[in-house]
Image (cartoon, rainbow, N blue to C red; front, side):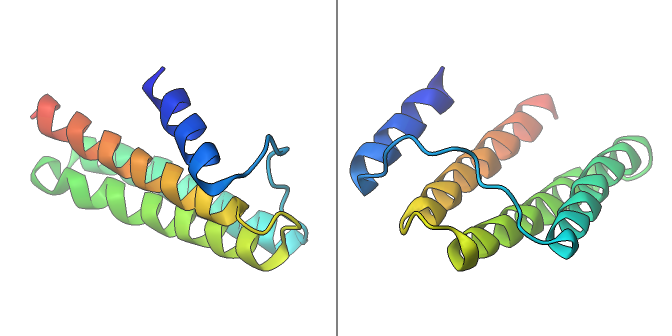
Length: 106
């Protein structure tokens, strides 16, 4: 529910209406996004099993790279001029939630 409120507030602040989710336009973009997503999942599994003390880095780095890639491609190829800012705000929100979740869990 909090994510929905953050999204609504960011849309109001940036004056961005309801938009369809951004679709990656080229096959290379889809491949890169898939690889970054798999790296995020794979690093979480490895970090939970082997490197518990550095779990935060194994989660944050792939997640940050994926959000940065999606924000850049949306900035570069989207028709909506401010939609990439919305993705950036929600990405930062996701990072904060991950940080809090890891801190609470350990």
